[in-house]
Length: 222
Picture 1 (cartoon, rainbow, N blue to C red):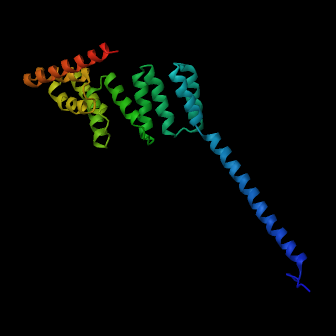
Picture 2 (cartoon, rainbow, N blue to C red; picture 1 turned 180 degrees about the vertical axis):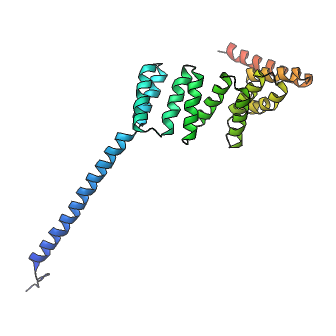
């Protein structure tokens, strides 16, 4: 005769039912809590509006872009990306002062976008704040920004002040990143000549001629 596995099977079944009920209840509560959390995140997430704003900017739909930016700012007034996109909005329209203010706010709020720093630097140049542009650009490089556009813009600020000698090391550094850029090479050659470095200017001008000849050969081969 087989022995009963449990003395009181009804009690065991009742215990298992209670355990399953607790597990089910905990799972249900967890799902409810998660759903509430997701709803909260979505209600305060500016990303959909900012994505829409960027798409609108690409289509030059400025009124639509601004409406999306405003909605994003209402949801997350301290999000750096809100002010990054706001800066881009003004930058697209060459509202340099407003763009600079928005980018500065994005920086203050901890943006990690190098594009914010690059555009802020160019806005300073367009506003003719050349000394501030040089200082800001050098600060960016000191912080570890490696893009060659930073020395290029610093050089631009110097050149607009007529400071060819100060621009030269920045032009040279920029050219290391933008190899064979004809415009940049012409700027550097002109700076060499203006500061009496005729041999360097001639060498660079020869290089420009070779690059342009190579480009023409490629065009002719199409």
